[in-house]
Image (cartoon, rainbow, N blue to C red):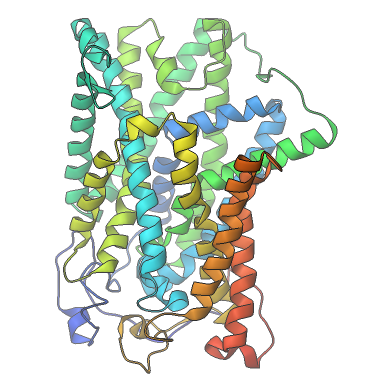
Length: 512
């Protein structure tokens, strides 16, 4: 049974009318503002959580990720089983990470104060924020590519301006800049309206994208008279190669969702109950993901007889359609889909993360705009297709997600046995539950270093030494596992929350 030591009464965050609730309760200004403080009302239903996952799943990146699983050497049924197993794992972990934020009504970086300390929580906040900024730029670039297709179909005369060699600057064509700017402004305007408007958008966008994907899939299947072969792999694995390929596919699914999974508390905080969160996760993850996977595989399978080759990039698939209306509709669909995932996965997260660093100087809106500006400065179009650049930037940063997740779960379930003192999350008192040593928890800092070295090493060592080349696929599991075990050992030695004086609890039951 989860214990909560107070019931906060402050206004909702993220665009809702501000109020003095957190100040009245004596929360320290260095730790609180209207956006980070506990919510007064939690109104999201299971449908809102379901719609959140629809927006997160229906993306160009998700489409490509599923398509590339066939390159491993798995046949259709093996891919489906791997997808189901992977998404059930994601669902389990999302339920775990959702609970403390839903109970306390606070976003992910504030929840992290319990494990890292009220000041130490800036460590996971900054790491997650930087990852989100980079991916925000990538997703905006992918949406811009879809918009380019629409522009070129409607106005073919713009083709010269889409040529980066003749009309380009810093690696992007003039038309690319226009499309990127349009998407950048649209997303910023949507975000600026606050969480309520974002909720309305994702409630609409998820089902709308589904409807168009069904139409596009049906259109392509009719074009080939429903004569498709679901065995899309160019080679077949067997024996231990099949086992490793199968587990690598499962790991790829978990890794793909690792970012939104870590900061899922940013959304579960709005849910009216943990029961609604679990129901929304069930609908939005395994059920929704399986339907999306079927659409993806059927559409990809239709590209083989239609175009003579397997195409796993939905943007290229739309570009090759011979119907203007279908191209325009498909292009706009992937624009909407990408805006959806960008807002929920890569805009809201850094908004809370950067606001957490300096609550009185950086509001939720300002934190989001910092991320938006940063996404342009990293010029994602220059390194998105560069495997080396991705390895040494997002590969290394992404490897830290696992340790952060493992530490959060270990602290809440194993060390604190599902208790959280909400008021203590906002106090700078040296007697506060989460003050530790000068605001930092040495156990968490040491654990993230140990687990970070293991996780980052699992990415870099195979690349540099060309050994255990399969290991990078499991970097999230390496980081999460080492972080979980290391933190429990260090926290018990430090007697965090009296954990050294009693038998060890395991993860606890997320359904409790």
